[in-house]
Image (cartoon, rainbow, N blue to C red; front, side):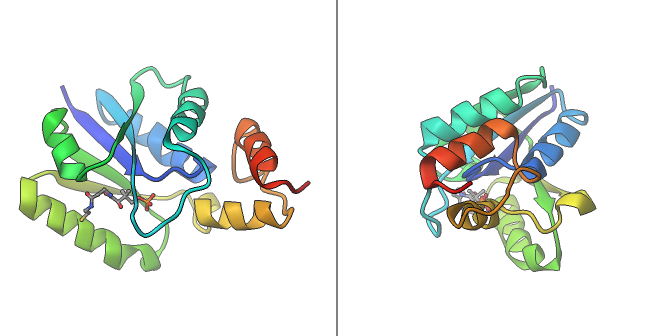
Length: 159
Ligand code: PNS
């Protein structure tokens, strides 16, 4: 069984994440979306809220499940017999940090990282940008599913 993990903060999940998850699910028997802590970021939604949002927006993908983890990603992979980490690359600016993480993860555990090119439609998209726009009442309806847009409005206000 080929199992992969799509890790991230998903605070909140965007159409960019959903694009990568859907495409990854076509290449593996099972894909786990793992909500992980990124110690460099503060979060708007709790882990449970993020899990619920991801479950709802990926319910059409039968081989995808959602989980959370608060340790090293490679330890999660080992405990769950996951052979591959799948990440989306939006632009060159993502590359340095992602390459470092991929190399550290490979060296430490042998877990491979596979990068997928983000669809050009989503190359500028990030959860941080979505939160910034939503905070000031900007329109994020083309960036996140309707239910996430509604949750953002409830949490930060705006239009
Ligand atoms: O969506 P993000 O915030 O860019 O995702 C980054 C994330 C959560 C995947 C990364 O910070 C991570 O893997 N955190 C778990 C702890 C870990 O394994 N750190 C070592 C990476 S070298």
